[in-house]
Length: 458
Ligand SMILES: Nc1ncnc2c1ncn2[C@@H]1O[C@H](COP(=O)(O)OP(=O)(O)O)[C@@H](O)[C@H]1O
Ligand SMILES: N[C@@H](CC(=O)OP(=O)(O)O)C(=O)O
Image 1: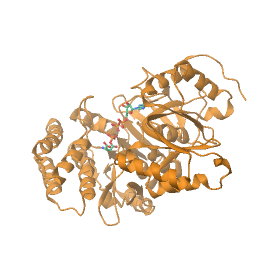
Image 2: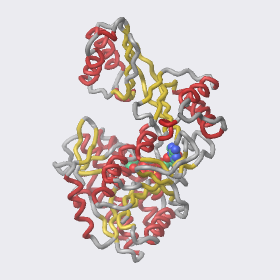
Image 3: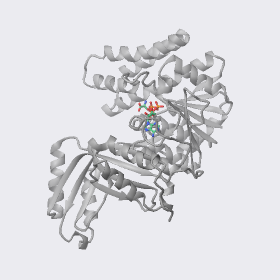
Image 4: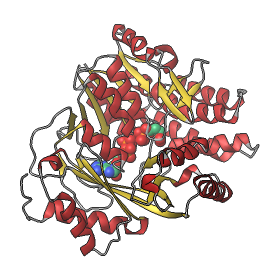
C-alpha cells in the first residue's frame, strides 16, 4: 500500500486535479491521498495558505475582510466550476468558511492555526467530492477522526506517539482516503499546524501509522536535483539518496521535501519516492536507508539564508570548565535555539536563525547579558549569513573534499566565515555572507558535478 501526497502546486487548478485523479486511478495501491491547499498556478500567484494568513490577521485586527475572503472563495469556486462539481460542494465550502470566520477562539494563535488548517481541510473535501463524482469511491478523513494528535511546545508542533496506533484503524476503510495535510489536533481538540510545507510531514506520519510500503511525494519537478534548480540551470537529477543525506539537504535548503518528514519514514523504514505530477511516468528520486553507488562523492549542495552569528571571545576560554554550557544556557533562557557551535581556543560562535528575535532591543539585551555573565572580552554579532552544505555518504571514504570545496570557493572570491564538519562525515557546512549564496552554489556545483578532477580514495 502506498501513501501518496500531492503538494500545493499539484492541486493549484482544475487541470491539476485531473492529473491527480489519473495518477490515483492508475494504481490500486494508492489507497491514501494526502493533499495540500491550492498552491501557486504561476510564479507571481499567491498560495491559499498565504491568503488565509492574511485573512486571519484581518479578522484579529478588525479590518475589512471582504477582499481577501473573495480571493479565497474564488480559488475554490473556480476549481469546483471548472470540474463541473455539484452545487452541494460549493455550499459546503461556503458554509465551512462562514463557520470559521464567525467562530470564537480562545487566542489569536488558535484562530491563526484554524484558518491555516482550513486551506488543506477544504481542499481534501473537494478532492473527495471530485473523486466520488467521477466513479472513484473516496472518503474525506479529518485528523480529528483519524486521531492524528500533536503537541505544540515552544512554537514547535510534534506528533504524539499514540497517533500511530490510532491511524492503524484507517486500514479498515474501503474507499480511497483523502486526508488533509499540514495539521493535527491537540489533546484539547484544537487544530495545530506544522511549520510551512508541513503536508510532507502528514504524509510521512500516515505512511508510518498505516505501515505503507512506499511514501510517494508528488510535486512540480522531475526529481530532486543536486542543487536548487532556481539557482543552478538544469542541475543533475539525483536518482537515489539516503534518508540521512535527504535529512541534511532538506534542513539546509532543499525545500522540495520538509526535513521533518524524514523522521517517521526513517523510524518505520519506509522508502520515499519524489515524483512529478506533470510527468508521472518519470521515476523521480528514491530516498531509502541505503543507496546504490553514484558517480559522485557528493550527492547534493544546499544553501539557506536567514542566519546570524554571535561570537564570544575570552582569553583562556579553553581552560574555563563549562564555558560553552553557560553560554548555551543563557541562549536557552532567552528561548533561542542555537543551530551550530563552531569553536576556537579563545572564541566560541553561536549560529542561529535570525528571525527568532522579535526586535533589536531583545538582541542588544542578549549581547549585553552574554558579555556580563560570561565576563567575556568581546561579544559581537554578524547578520545576513547563509549556510552552505555539501552532503554525501561518499565523503567518508574520500580525501580532499574540504580542500576541493574551499579551493573552488576561494577561486570565486568567497570569504568563509565558518567551517563545520559533523563527526558522521556525511556533510560539511560553510557560513558565508548571504549575498554570496548564488555564486558559492554555482562554484561548488561546477567543481563537484562538472569538473573531472579525480578525488583520491582513502
Ligand atoms: N534540490 C532541489 N531539487 C528539486 N527541487 C528543489 C530543490 N531545491 C529547491 N527545490 C524547489 O522545491 C520546489 C518543490 O517544492 P514545493 O514548492 O514545496 O512543492 P509542492 O507545491 O509540491 O509542495 C521545486 O519547484 C523547486 O523549486
Ligand atoms: N499549504 C501549506 C502546507 C504545505 O505543505 O504546502 P505545500 O505542499 O504547497 O508546500 C504551506 O503552504 O505551507
